[in-house]
Image (cartoon, rainbow over all chains, first blue to last red; front, side, top):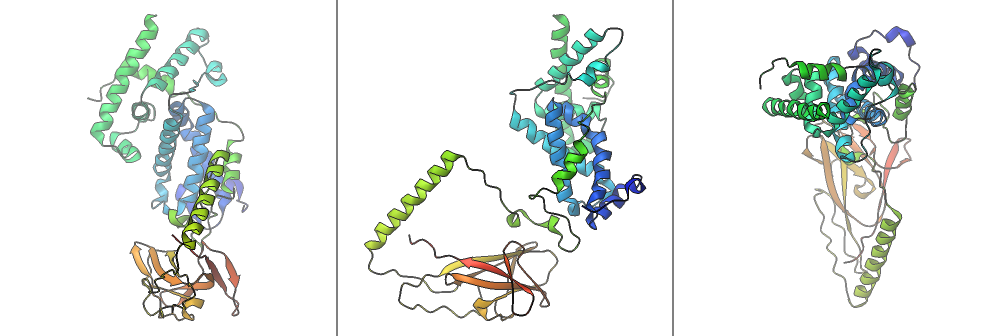
Amino acid sequence: MTQTRGLSIQNDSDAAIVARVLAGDSGAYAVIVARYRAQYARYAVRMLGSREDAEEAMQDAFVRAYRSLAKCDEPERFAPWFFRILANRCRTAGTRRGRRERTFVNDELALLSASEEHPAERAAWREELDRALQRLDTDQREAFLLKHVEELGYDDMAVITGVGVSALKMRVKRACERLRVLLQEVQGD
Amino acid sequence: MTDHRDPFIDQIAAELKRPVRFDARFDERVMDALNAPEVIPLHPTRQAGRRPWIMRPWTLRVSPIGAFATAAALVGVVVFSAWQLSAVDQVQVATQEVGAEGLTPVANTGDKPQLVTHQFTYYQKGLQSISLVGGFNDWDSDSTMMTEVSPGVWTVSLVLRPGVYEYQFILNGKQRVTDPTMPQTSSDFGSPNSVVTVSPKVPQ
């Protein structure tokens, strides 16, 4: 792997880094990895329900993006291009795994950052929320996360998912209704 | 389906927006994965990342029982074919060429010659022409032109006797290149040639 001039390219644009990688400086890709790992890890974890699955999907997405980098027609818009690859990997991983052996994100990080006033209640709420999220259909979970957590517009969501805006709105609506039912059932227990 | 704010959903979203943390070695693992053998290294001259699926190596995973079943099936085919051959006095073999203008048809020698159709494929967009040259056409750059069957996918099929052939592609009548999907050997002229082994087909 070619040595990259460390910090000197940390602030370079995506397009500049992509050009470096395509020119043979594969080490420059580490900057891309660090930049978008931080940005999209949350989506992958929420989508797949476990950190291990999310790391696997993210790694797969980064490798696929690297292999297809020459096909990235607008390297200055690397982020949405990569996000589309990641969303596909998450969808595939979620479908492959199905509803079996889902683990829920109740990791140490969540517990550490729980409310100091009612940490136990807070942790329980988070666990129920993660559980409810994983009970959504994959399409609904994806649409909900893109809309309400990643705060994307429907046009951007349509580009990433390849699904029409109307269908996406319907999925978000159904996801909200379903979450409401699932979580109110919990609160009513 | 309006975009109005819903406090309940906002509360859920806020909870789900909390950051997550990956393993500390995640970035390192990704960079290692880029150098794994199955990853085609990016290179400015080879443009390996543009390879279509048809030219990528396959990874075939076979369970032990699957391998056993396949082996048994192959043995069955061979035994059945041998039994059929013994009952046939003469095998008629077609000797007409397929899709290769300018090639001399291969003569039927009468001693059960076997001719095999072999398809050559090359992938690159933006070319005007590709010709195939090799030992099978005396390295004649005008005799075997390839056809662009879909954008960037060039093919030609030749009927060949079983054997080992060296060949090259000539892009736009000028640039000689090897087949990136096949093994290479050095030629008498110093430049590498691709090598293909045409195997006899199993008689039906």
